[in-house]
Image (cartoon, rainbow, N blue to C red; front, side, top):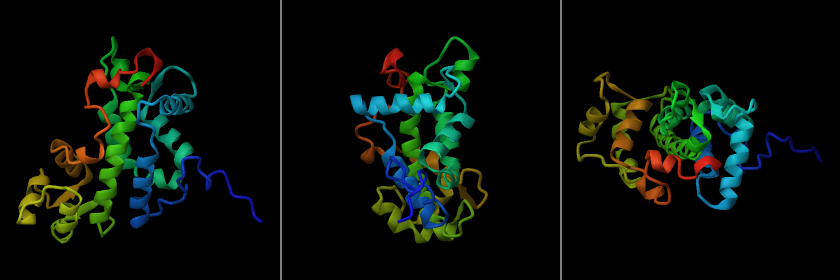
Length: 219
């Protein structure tokens, strides 16, 4: 029998090549969200610290966006993570600087005490990407009014607040009035209404205290 490649046999239960596009990117984002060690158990903290050290090869205690992106590629698979890139950027920007430091450098990178909250944000944004990708039937990283209206019942079933007239909600989300909902706009709408709260009951509120809850031992 042919030996299975390390990339195909991910230790996190995710097939590395599973993010090829259309529904594959959506399925990959969901699997990746479930694989992230965000809980405060000793086992998950140990996994987080090993993951941080892998993402931080030079050992300076700071993670740039490029290092997070590269680390996710190496840990969970190249193609699938690439398809989730909008979610990675949003999560990194939300997490960096949560725990204010004494220098600008602390606020431009993700530190060890912020790392758990980076993973919490990644989980949330990957799940939002999963929903967004399911609505975006044109696979152009935009949702038009027709796509949104057709997905209204599905969104309600997922716990999203959609008006009786779905086009009214579409106009609310389409903040710039461009006639298309971008992933950023979709995230801002969903996060402002805490629309993922029902699947994140065990995660901390997003506060500086929560980000540093594990202290000097890492986030």
